[in-house]
Length: 172
Image: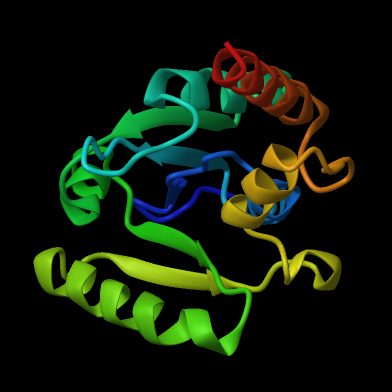
């Protein structure tokens, strides 16, 4: 079955610093709804991130390397413009809790104001990921806690490396 124009690809944007199993869950479930998913990694020089944009893109590509229908690309600027340039019409956003809704609703309405052809699809994560955030993962990893089962193995390994190098340089 052929998809209507612009519905061949959905865009899942975020900073993904780092990507979590909650994000992976949304991407894989979104891939059941759309032939292609474009994971759009936000490049925001004003925001301090643990992983550079290039690292985040490379890590996400590694996670989905065996799934050619899942693409990964960095972007900056307005999401609505990025989506239009990629000839997509759907943005996927995850909602973990009611507290996420107000911000996400504002963003969805502004994106639709900028690009009236754009639709936002809100998806709930699987129940066992509703508490999970990149910030929480970084905090636990920075304090030496285990993030096994919360992030893909490649992310877990890279978090250990990042925080090992940070603690080594701070002890010099």
